[in-house]
Amino acid sequence: MNLRTNTATILIVDDIPSNLSVVVDLLEESGYNVAIAQDGEEALQRAQLLQPDLILLDVMLPGADGFEICRRLKAAENTRDIPVIFMTALVATEHKVHGFAAGGVDYITKPLQIDEVIARVGTHLKLHATQKRLEERNAQLHHCQQYLERQVAECTAELNADNQQLRTEISEHKRAEQQLLMMNFALKRMREAAYLVDRHLRFIYVNDEACRALGYSREELLDMTVYDIDQDAAHEEMTRTSEQDGLVVIERRHKTKEGAVFSVEIRITRFEYEGATLTLCLARDISERK
Image 1 (cartoon, rainbow, N blue to C red):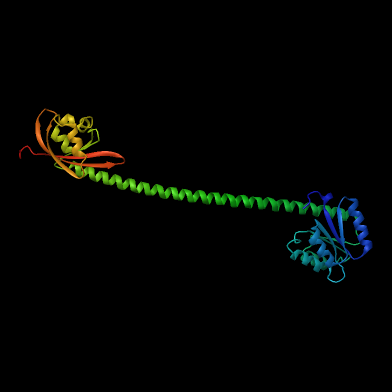
Image 2 (image 1 turned 180 degrees about the vertical axis):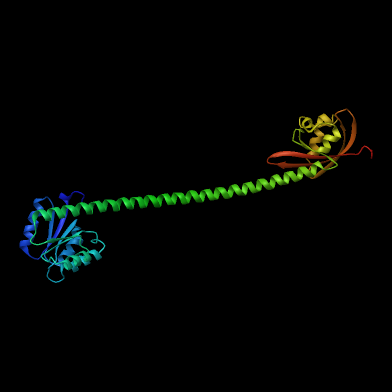
C-alpha cells in the first residue's frame, strides 16, 4: 500500500470512453498512477494483477453490474481490502444502500465534479493507508504478545521445574535431618560411650555417655583426640584396626578428666561419608568384668 496519495495507483472502471478520458486526465494531473478497465471481468483481472490502491467503479456496466463486481472483489483474498468508490447517475437512497452493502466505501454521483472526485479519492486513500498501518502495528503487537507469552510459558515451566526440584531437595533434607535427630536421640541414650572420629582420630561427635564416663563436657571432648583419653594407644594399631572391613573389637584403657583409668571394650566401625573416612567407636566399661 502506497502511503503517499500522489504515488498511489487508481483503477478506473467505466464502459464509456469519454467518461474514462475525463477521470483519467483529472487524476493524472493530480499526480496519481491510473489504470483503466471497460467491463467487470477486465476490472477483476486488472485488480488481481495491479493490486491498485483504490478503485473507481461505475455501477452501470455491460454484463455484471458494478455492485456484483464489487462483491466479487470483496470475496477474493487479494482484493478484498482495496477500497471501492462507486460512480453512477443513480441517486436513489436504495441504490446507495445497495452499494454500501456490496462493500463500497463511498458513492460519487454523475456528472462528476472535479473537486469532489479529488477530495473523496484523497480521503479514502489516507483512510486506507491509516488502516493498513494499524493492521501492521496490530500484527506486530500480536507477534510481540505471542513472543512474550512463549517467554512467560518457558519461564513458568522453568520455575515449576526449579520449585519441584527445591521441594524434592527440601523433602530429602527434612528426611536426612529427621534421621540425624533420631540417630542422635538413640546415641544419647546408649549405655555405651559413642565417639565419631576422623582419619586423624579427632573427635567430631560424642554422646552423653561418653561425656559422663570421661568427665569432660562435650565442647572439651570435641577439641580433643583419641590420644587425650587413651595415651597408650599406638597410632599404627588404631589405624590398622579401623581400616579393616566390618566390625572390629578391641580392649583399651581410658583415662578420665580426673586421671582415673578404667578398662573399655571398643567396637570399631569404619565407613565413608561424602568422601571422608570416619570411624564410629562404641566403648563399654568392662572394669567389673576385668
